[in-house]
Image (cartoon, rainbow, N blue to C red; front, top):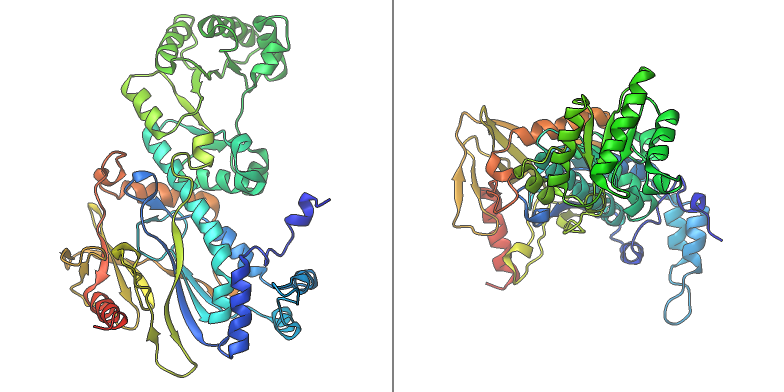
Amino acid sequence: MTRVGDVYRTSLTLLTDLYQLTMAQSYWASGTADKEAVFHLFFRRNPFGGGFAVACGLARALDCLSAFRFGDEDTGYLASLVGNDERPLFDPAFLQELAALELRCDVDAVPEGTVVFPHEPLVRVRGPIQQAQLLETVLLNVVNFETLIATKAARVCLAARGDPVIDFGLRRAQGIDGGLSASRAAHIGGCTSTSNVLAGRLFGIPVSGTHAHSWVMSFASEREAFDAYAEAQPNNCVLLVDTYDTLQGVRHAVETGRRLRERGHDLAGIRLDSGDLAYLSLEARKILDGEGFTETAIVASNDLDEHLIASLKEQGAAITIWGVGTRLVTGGDDPALNGVYKLGAVRRPGEEWQYRLKVSEQAVKTTNPGIQQVRRFETEAGFLADVIYDEDQGLPEEAVLVDPVDPTRHKRIPPEARATDLLQPFVRGGRVVHEGPPLAAVRARASDQLTRLHPGITRFVNPHEYPVGLSVELHELKTRLVLEARGV
C-alpha cells in the first residue's frame, strides 16, 4: 500500500506529464537538448468573469525547483515503462543523463501578491530547452491553482468590506495538498484565518473554529451542550445555534453567555449555518444586543461566496465574520485558471535569438514572441496600464501599448507615469537567489495592490478592462512572424 509519506517526498521531480519526459529524451536524441530557450507562463482570461487575478504559488514552485533532481527511484521507475512494442520507453543512456542532470535555468517571476492580468507572463524560464520543458507541468500545477484561489479569496474579502473572512474549506478541498495550498493562497488573498490546523503550523496562519452540530446532538439538550462547551472552551466560545431552532438557540447561547461572564469570560460569538442568513442575523443581533451582548460576533457559513456575501451586505445582514468553504477552496464556479506555458524564443549557443509564436485561428490563442517583460505604469491615482515588451528591443520613454487581441486599440502612456518591471529574478543558473518575502508581507502586498486598482476593475459584474498590451515594437514583430507563418 502506498502511504502518504511515500507520495510527499523531498523530491517531486516526477510530478510531471509523461510527454515532458518523452520530449526531453527526443531533445537528447536529436542533439538539441542544450539549445537555449525562453518560455512564458501566462493565462488568457481573468477567472470568475472578473477584472483581475492575484499572482500566487511562486514559493511552492521555488521549493520544487530547489529540489529538482532525478533520484535512483525516479530513474528506476522510468526504466520500467514500456512503449507499444513492449520495449523500454526510455533509453538507459538517457536515464543516466537524467540522473546526472543539474538545473541550469534562470527563472524570473511576478512576486506573489501582485495583481496580474491576461496575456502578461507571470513566470519566465530561460535555459537549456530540455530543462525548461521539464519545468512546465509543475509550474503550471502550482501557479494555476494558487493564483485561482488567491483571486477567489480576494473577491470574497472585497465583498465582505473589511469584515474578517475565515477559510473553512479543508473538508471540501481537493485532496491533502489542495487543502494546504488553498489555505495558504486564501490567506494571501485576504482571509484572516483558517480552520486548517496543519496550514496554521506550516505557514503561520491564524487558526479559527467553532464546533459541529454533532456536539449539540450528542447531549440531551442544546442548553447542556452549550454549557459543556463553554466549560471546556471558556476563552474561545463560539456557539453553533441552528441545530434545532436558530433563534431559540441564540437565546440558549445568551444563557450560557451569562454563566461565562460569572467566570470572568464572555460569549465570543454565535454561528449561523443555515436558513435565511439576512433575517436570522438581524433577529439574532436584536436578541444579543437586548441582553447586553453587543460585542458578541455573528459568524455565518453555508456555501458562501462573493456574490452571496455581497447580496447579504446589500440586505443589511448583521453578520460580522464570514466562514467560506467549498466555493473558496475549489474555485467554485471557475475550477481552473487557464494558464499556459509557451515558447517565445530559441537559439543555439552563440547565435542570435530566433523568435517563436503559436499561430491560431482564434486571435486570443496566438501567442506573443520574444523575451518578454512587463512594465507597469502608475500615477498617484493608482495603476494605469501594463506594457508587455521584448527585453532585447527595449521600451521607448514614450510608451504606447497595442491591444494584443484588437490591434486597432492603442493607449499612450503619460510621460509622468512611474514605471516598474514586474518580472524579478528568483532563480539563476538553477539556484534560488531570492526566496521572496514572508507570508505576512505577501498578504500585505496583495491588499495594497487591490487598493491601487480602479473600483470598476474590482467589481463583480461587467468589470472594467484593465489596459494590458504589447509595445509597438513587439506588436510589429508579432505581426511579421504571423504573416510569415501563414506564408504571406
